[in-house]
Length: 488
Image (tube, rainbow, N blue to C red):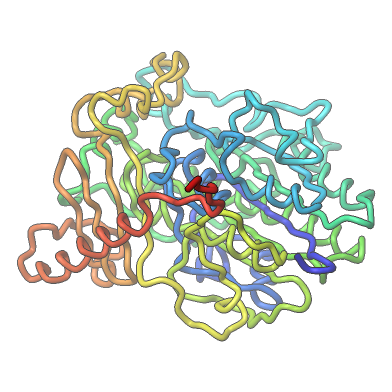
């Protein structure tokens, strides 16, 4: 442990796609604070991928440096237990003053939060998230499961709509102002935005130029995609939507991202005002992405791995004393690398086997590559009913999540356990109960045509399968570092 450890910011929006960033070349985005950070002081990884396309398994993975299969964290209801490694607990144990403001979806709440943070922020009062009314229409309307709300109305004298995200960001800023000077700080901000429902107030709702939105990946002409996608499309009942309607939904999502970017900028300003910005390591990353209209879908699934779901923003500004070459890196990285990078900057030696690798060399510019492949996994087996995430809430057809719940409750192939391996050019998905997937990302970046039966790619497919086997053998378990004393 170093004599003076850096402060650490873990800014973690929910469900932000990796392509909704101005510095990634998306002309419709409004992310000036993130773009400026990458231009001047930080590094943005254009090929960063999550390890599960649903929030709780992804969070358990990036907060431990372990893949979801290692300890069975692959559902929304199997969270980290007290005996399991969690980055927040590690930081608190070595003397960090850990402030947590935002959603959980990480640790089992039955055991409380004292082991993980010094302060769990609970706002005194907030407005309902995503506005007061979704205006869903009747159950047979094509809006009923769309998650679309649009513009949130505010009072004339309100600078913003005061929901819990705003309360947590402003609470973090107040904590920075009043934090004790004799401890390193860790601020963890797992926000809800831009998670659907798709809703945001002005100026962010109106700031997005609809004419600049990239072309949506259409559901027309898809070949060999998994059955869960067609099943969801049928139950979402959004087949009548025009491109103009899709653009309004997408622009609202982009506006939600713009609001989060603004909040991120406020936090950076607070660090500068407090005189601790230079000595702070800043991490901005999302747990997974969002369909946002691609393939005619909204929200997410538990076992599909299209880039819009699995590629995420991952931006890092190192603390003073660590080298950085600002800009974009195209190295393949995983969210499990978060833990190892924080450990490296904080001078912490892990007391367990983790599978993340420090990004410090890539950030400093001494290494161009990081991994030869990235992995993501999800789904369940037949009979694993405890893994189907079914609740009385999503069993009700009036629930927004009823369509996805129906796919999870199915004992057909839709819920199948699946694993993705992705290189820079190819993506292979092994699916247990239905046809595997193979995509040539160079010629088909939208992953529209499944080439699993193409004989010209047989050699490449065999190589990907062998690499996936290596991955599972290397990560199938962990042996405790502490050894028992054997009696002779």
